[in-house]
Length: 107
Image (cartoon, rainbow, N blue to C red):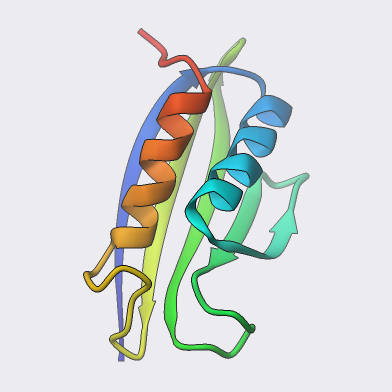
């Protein structure tokens, strides 16, 4: 059984800067990089120690919405009902908070 939830934020950044900030946000929150399609602006992180581990997977989608402005959408997929911090969406929320500290918000 899985459940999905998401949150979106806009930042004054390029796609490359957003990718770098997402990787740092994942490092700060203890997430592991699982896969990426950088050309499509999609990165996947997991709270599990291995690809098949139970826990939360966070998919980040980056989309340029205006020159110098990107929208980052973080989707949380709960695997087998277990999470890193004990509640649904906790890894997504942790990455969102870390990302907000790394990039300036779009106004």
